[in-house]
Image (tube, rainbow, N blue to C red; front, side, top):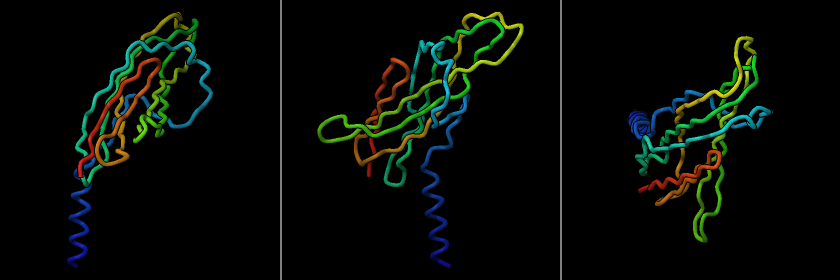
Length: 159
């Protein structure tokens, strides 16, 4: 019985340290698909900030928030919208001794048939959250790319 109580208390403590689930204004995908409309999409601004980064012995997760805004072009009768956001993560060498995490964020444009839509340019802006994981103790560097913009965030994983 004591073991069960200790296990439940430990589990509740561990879950307290992790950031809450990420919120999305636009759905996220990790699969590549047919993105024929993306040539008509221009990213004008990309901002990212750390929402929750209490990295410690019991928590290796942090929550980031990113905002993307720009323009989409389409023909008359076809209304553009951001269908989803593709996220790709990988570990890359960043210096001779350590690795970094590279995250590539790509908004995916699509169109829907609307007879009364006049065509032309339409602006968009959305904010999503993303959970990242530290890959080692100490300094963790995240290089985040969106379009031609590159941002670097460093988070410290303490013991």
